[in-house]
Image 1 (cartoon, rainbow, N blue to C red):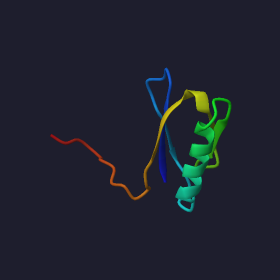
Image 2: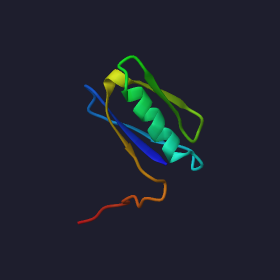
Image 3: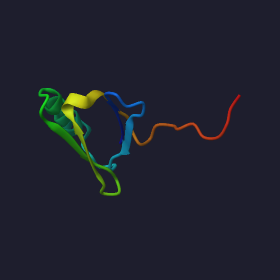
Length: 77
């Protein structure tokens, strides 16, 4: 599953690829829980085992995608 997180005062978003077996409902529940307080931290682990922490007070949005989504490649006109 692909995840994009918008962060306050940052021109770039955090993009991660989570393991394919991750439970989408569990991720949504964790995001809901973290966004309910300004003092919590959202921890996610990507496919390579790297952990990323984002303070809830800095999250502007979270976008959940799928690993199967088509990604544009190359150039088009």
